[in-house]
Length: 222
Image (cartoon, rainbow, N blue to C red):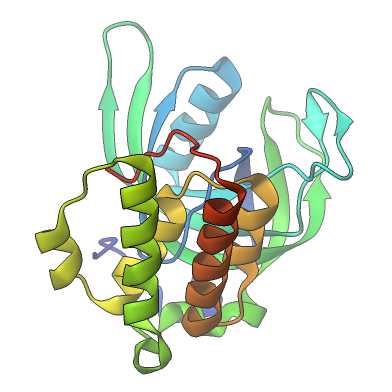
C-alpha cells in the first residue's frame, strides 16, 4: 500500500524519529498497524509527527533488561511507519494507522525536552525493506498455510480464506506475523529476520511449537 511519500532507500528516511514502545507489537514494511492513542505524551507525539513527516517508530521494550517502568530499555531494532490514517474522537483520543516503511537500528537515544522518547536511528542494515515483495519466490507458502490451518483448527477460529488465497506472499507472511498472538521474543525474532523466507520459517516454527504445547491463546487472526 502506498504511503503517499517516496521512500526508495535509507537516505530517504529521517535519522531522528520519535519512538513508541509497545510490548508485543510488530510493525513490518508495508504492513498496517491501527493504534488507539490516549496517553498525553503519545498524543503530543502524534501532534508533532503530523506537523512534520508523520513518521513514528514502533519498538518493543526488552524484557531481559526492563529498566525503569516509565522508561524501559528498548530492543535495538524497531520499524518506522508513516501515519496514513488519522481521526480524532470526541473524548480526546486519536485513532491512527501506521504503514510500515523500514526497520531501523537504534544508534542512540536522544535527551528530549518533550514527554516522549526520540532516537537516532540507522536503516542501512535493512535496505531490502525498500524492495516490495523481495524474496517472495523463496517462501514456503504451503508451509505457512498449513501452519495457519492447523492453528485455526486447533483454536476453532474463522479466517477469510478467499482473502488469504489472493494475498501475495509478502503481504501474507507479514500480516500473519503482525497479527499473531505470540510473545515479545517471538515477535522480535520475526522483526529481525534477515529476509522474508526466514521470517516465514520463524512463523511456521513458532506456530508449530505453540500447537505442541497445546495452549490456545486468544488470537486476533480472525
